[in-house]
Amino acid sequence: MANLNRVMLIGNLTRDPELRYTPAGLGVASFGIAVNTPIGKDDEGNRKTETLFVDVVAFGKQAEVIAEYLRKGSLIYLEGRLRYRTWEDASGNKRSKHEIVLNNFQFLNTRGKESPQEVAGIPEEDEDIPF
Image 1: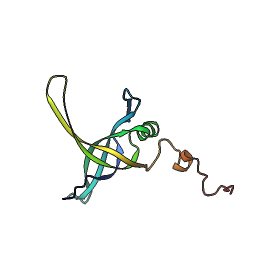
Image 2: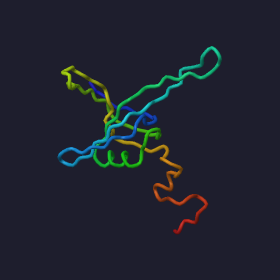
Image 3: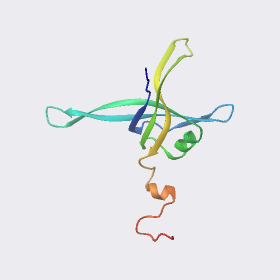
Image 4: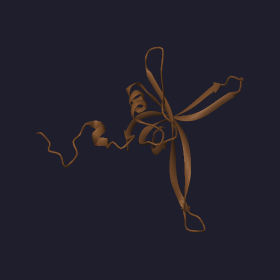
């Protein structure tokens, strides 16, 4: 029987990414995102949304890029897989959580007032392209 473990989400970072390095020098970034889902309207006609908070972990160059360019509130599209992790806290209590291990991502906005084109070094449409 076939199995599939794939997650695709668009959401806003709930905190600045935390970048650490393994003893081997591999970058590891952890951050959270909030995903809002419309669920209808209330009695007064106002839109209601359900918010899901998800922890994400990225490795290698992806971790370094995310830590450099994204901040709390940044909008991101991500693809990854679910992972269930268990550990023991400082008090000896068993803890567990589901998190997403990042495979692919795309910035949907940038920090500050820079456009995605400015960050990537792409000329704006009204500028002459030199080729």
